[in-house]
Length: 453
Image (cartoon, rainbow, N blue to C red; front, side, top):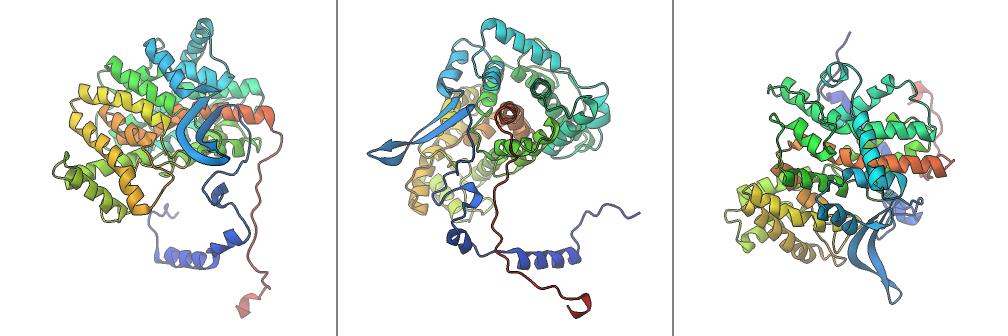
C-alpha cells in the first residue's frame, strides 16, 4: 500500500494552478454587491451577527453625534477588566478560578461558592487511565495545538455521554476540559521534547491544592519550582486571554459549530483549529521572533534613531519576515489602547527585573513608544495604533521559560473558559443553525461530453 505522501508533486502544483485560475474572484464584486467581506464593513467594523452577555469591548464613543476612537475597555459579564484584576491582585489571590466562575455563571462567587468551584475543577483534573501513555505519548507532534486537538477529540471516545447536549452534561464536559487543558498541553510538549528533540521525559501530576497557573509551572519544570511573582503573572495572563467578545474568530467558530447541534468535543476542536492560526492565537510568537531579529540587527538598543530605522525597514518589507508588519502593534478592534496590554505591562517590568532582563524591557518600551508614530507616518493611519496584548505576552512567556511551542496552547488554556461560556449561551438562547449567505458570481455553464472537452 502506498505511504502517506509528504511532498507536493509537480502534478499537485499544476492542479493547484488550475484551481486558482478557476476560483479567483474579482474583488471589486464585494463592493458592487455590498458584501461584508470577512463579516466586516468597509471601515473594518464587525457586522452584528449575534447577541451576548458574556463580554463587551468598547473602543469608540459618540462625540457630537460622531463615533470617535477612545481608550479601550473590556468587560467580563459587565465588570471592567481593570476592576476584576485589581480585585484579586490587591488581595494577593490568583484570579483564574474566580473569573472563570464569573464568565460561566454570570455572577461573582462568594467565598463558599469559589471554594466549591475550585474543588470541582481539582476533582476533574484527571485524565482517563493510561490516556497519557496511549494518546499523548503516541505520535507526538511538533505543533502542540494539533496535539491538543487530537487529545480533545479522543476524549470523546472515553465519554459515555459524549453526544448528550443537555445543559448539565455540556457543563460537565466543559468543566472537565477547562481542568485538563493544562495537562494535555504540558504533557504534549514533554512528549514532543522527549521523542522528537531527544530530551529527558518527566511527567508531574497536578497538585489539587494549587491554582491553574501554579500547576502549569509545576508540571512544566523538572524541579516543580516557581516564584510567587511568576505564578501571579501567568495567572494574570490567563485571565486577560480568557474572553474577548463573541466576534473573535475562535469564539465565533464555537457559536457556529455549536448551532449545528454537534458534541462539545467537536465544537472545542473546531475552536482550537481557529486559534492555531497565526492571525489569531499565534501572534505573540511572531512578536518574540521579531524582537530576536531586532536584537541582531540593531547594534545599540538604546539608540532611538537606530531602532526607529529598523521599524521603518519592517514596514518597507526590508527586515525580519518582510511582511511589512510590526507585530504586536495594532488591533482589529482597539485603536488608542488595549486594556489588556496596559494591565499586563505593569507586571512585565517587575518580572523583567527579577529575571535580569531590564535591557529587554527597555527595548520593548521604546518600540511601544516609537512604533505608533512611525506607523502613522509611513501608513498614514489616523485612527490610532497601540500595543496589543500579544506585544508583551510572548516576552512574559519567554521570561517564564515557557517554550514557544506552548505559547498558543497557553492562550487555549485560558480561552477554553470563554468558549465554554459561549457554547452554553448558544445552547440556552438559540435554536437555529448559523448559516450566512454567499452570493454565487459564477456564470451558468453548459455540460460538454468528455470526448469533446
